[in-house]
Length: 140
Figure 1 (cartoon, rainbow, N blue to C red):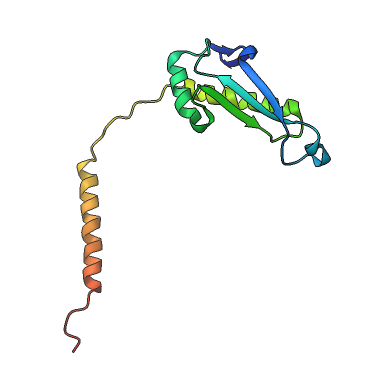
Figure 2 (cartoon, rainbow, N blue to C red):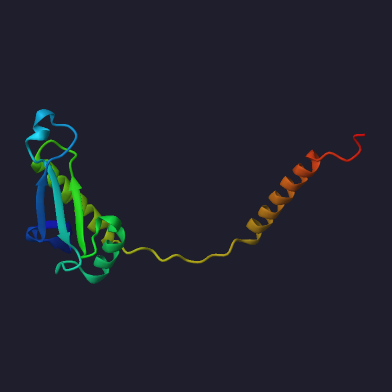
């Protein structure tokens, strides 16, 4: 079990890993050993995710989510398969944790009277500055 939050845990059977050749550090091993980890998580059909978390996750994932609702995370930062695998899991957990946070609703506010007056005074000051730069037509 992968603990995302105290109330939410993912079963490792829901994660599918595929290992591929990676670019980057590793010397000659780069050409021989498949160290890049590709994690697939079917977020759209996961029984462990609550509906509201699933909806926020679909929005947060963006281009990492395919049309079938599968979340794809590729980790190739490290030289070993195991560290890349753990990195992919950590990134998935962080994304799901962010999706569990309920966004605070935006409250519409009007600018205060003082703020409006400051804005208008600043506009007037800038207009006067530009007015002072103008040349009069008397340069003949």
